[in-house]
Length: 317
Image 1 (tube, one colour):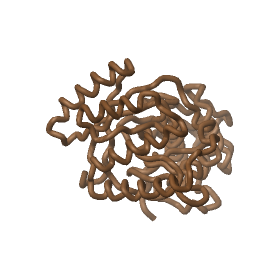
Image 2 (cartoon, rainbow, N blue to C red):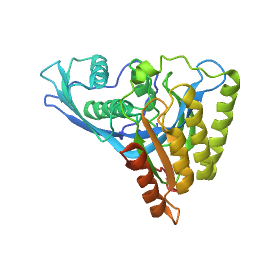
Image 3 (cartoon, rainbow, N blue to C red):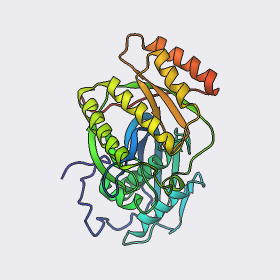
């Protein structure tokens, strides 16, 4: 069996019983992380049933989860207290144990909530991993997905890669690979979006648009494989434009203009959030100048700007 992210061996997701020893007399602590994603490079609906999908854009912002068991109690406490989804997840994990056990979960996140940066997904994935570390349980992606599918639609932040993910079904669709680092010059249009409520909205896309999403996914997969960031940016921009029929961004046209004026790669959107960003290649010799120009233009447009660095994975990036 292959090593998992938490250093334990992965077990089949169909394993009925959790491999868990008798509870320790003293509390044990597990710590783990999960990264966020700046919106989605692509999000829409593929042909066929259950075709809702998204493609992740991992960024260098994380949630850190710390879980300490308490063998003397069955109560599970969470801080911050408003992290109700994480509280539900940790309770589900503890309920699966053969011996009752309590504990205390702390979440420390650099991801703003309700903006489309996968803050909730990162909270949940980091929580599952930290609990696994504390309890001595393997937490491979399929086991985590089996829990998350009972809580909410989920981004594909379980995987160290750019992935196409069925967020409503909580299943991996396709691993695309890794991209060399980019800078995202991002703005926030304000407000928040509830992921669960958003995913209850019927998708207004036609069969022709479903086919276009399939073509865009194939194009994006080829672009990731070849490292063609210009093509990646073009797909991201087209996806942002198509999403206007579902959740329009009032500043999208101007952001596209800023991208063109500054020589960016494209515009990436948080399809179910409030964020938009201009993508800039970190290997571009004019990178610093482009970022400054984009920051200035975005600040004039929205009054707020945050820059992010995308994550790359693997020795070849």
